Length: 188
Length: 188
Image (cartoon, rainbow over all chains, first blue to last red; front, side, top):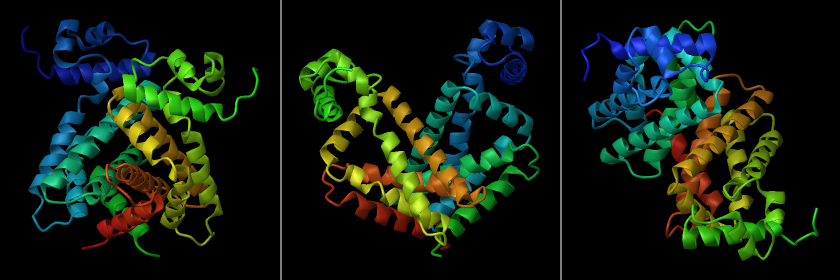
């Protein structure tokens, strides 16, 4: 291991996003990212498997936040209340990063390979939530349905949050989306 | 074009699935599939881009069934009623194919590349449904939320339908899943 660099992952993330936006994702190499960050490629690989992971390395932390929130939810909470709490618990992850989130969304939307990766990460999140609900004693198909619905709210809320002129906070948008889902599925 | 072969796609599909189950997906070549089907590789490529497409070529038809059902739904139907009708409209696609569906699910579950492809197809279906709802005048985020919720029901219902000892029909399971989603999202 080399010497410790203060917030090396954050510096790589910011440098990578600058370059993805300036030059395009394909045209950016790990060497470019390291040079822009003022760090070495060797340090890069201490934190990320490849340049793609700069865009996705947050997902393990997201999953942890969601699953822990599920576990903290009161025993009498319904499956959907627990899922709602899990989605809302991710708000701190997004709070200060709307500009990064917007750029990330644009880069991902422009590359089929990255869109696939995003779908896989979301499916993994849904599976982790369903597993968490089953540990709370929720049976099937309820555990899977509630988790998939929660991830639908998460995706739609995230897409809204990174919208061009959107000003509302992530948790405000999630709360609104959960309420909309409830209204949509209610008997007319 | 060579001479016409009665139900060539169906014969390729059956042959491919037999071989995927017997030898494994990787170990099966297009030449193997053609030989087992009693047809030529050249005829295979008239219907499928590669062996993977044997497992996924139904998705265009599925999407058409869903989008047409959305369009047929009465103008006064709610977004979720229209989506429910779209998911139910796929039942004829599955009616006689539970054995194929079970084998297909097992092959896909065993290969990351195929799981990714499945996720992409489902995301494409959700996007087509959201587009159909917007054409019906449903705004955002409702169109996306209702579509994603509908695809969640579709996925969970399909997974249930191919379950080991499951006997209920696809549309019975879909109706049950839609009712469960409604119950789950209702205020406790």
